[in-house]
Image (cartoon, rainbow, N blue to C red; front, top):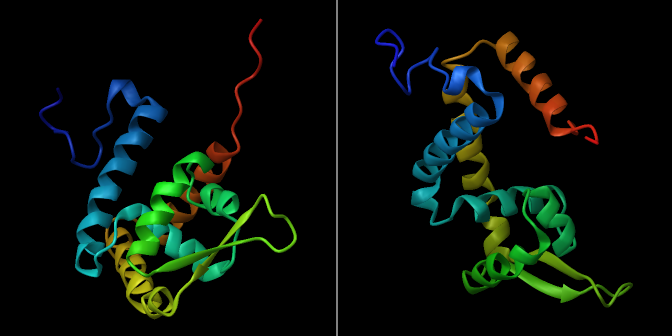
Length: 155
């Protein structure tokens, strides 16, 4: 280990800079920060993601919501059950496609929007304290490339 760049300090990358490993570590670190920021709201990180998605697309199908929060559709039932128990969302069968379920914010879920967005804004402000706007723009561009990245077929 490099004494000048200990783990969790800027400039330290694991496994000779392996992109996937270091993105995973960065995600986990940010998720820990999210958890601390949203703990007073009483939400899990995944519930926070789902609410943020519903604030822009209230009434989304459960499968679309799963895609929005980067989860497999089969994992959404338990999440939506918890969110319904908290009174944040309600579900209804899609009137046009009875195989689909639509997810709607309840009054309680809608009333949390300001607190949810405040936590997101605060996180963005914390990030901005450590990297410049230009660096963030470059990073977001790289993320968009990686999100559409596909491995070639190997024969």
